[in-house]
Length: 142
Image (cartoon, rainbow, N blue to C red; front, side, top):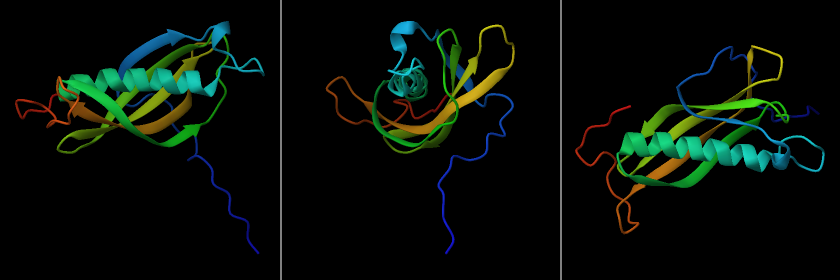
């Protein structure tokens, strides 16, 4: 009998893919019971950054409708400088999927480390909260 293990893809990335959309410092208030940065905090930072990128592309308000393929690769620690990068994956009629990568620079280090990545899907909405076509003028700009 062969065991099957599900793992995140190998961490072969050496530099971020996409456009920088948010950068913040991990603080003590963001920790879990083990003293590491809480995964939910990191996920929320990624969602904020992805929302910025999605709204820029859609040229409208956007809302998060799905988060998939999240890979928590390495821990984030207090004092890490966290940067989130966005890379457009797909544009539908009213939605867009963005691959987000969270990279950190640890204190006293210079090299960026990929810590988390995943695909986030956003829907373009109008002023009444209803889905609307992405790019009101029909042009998608990244």
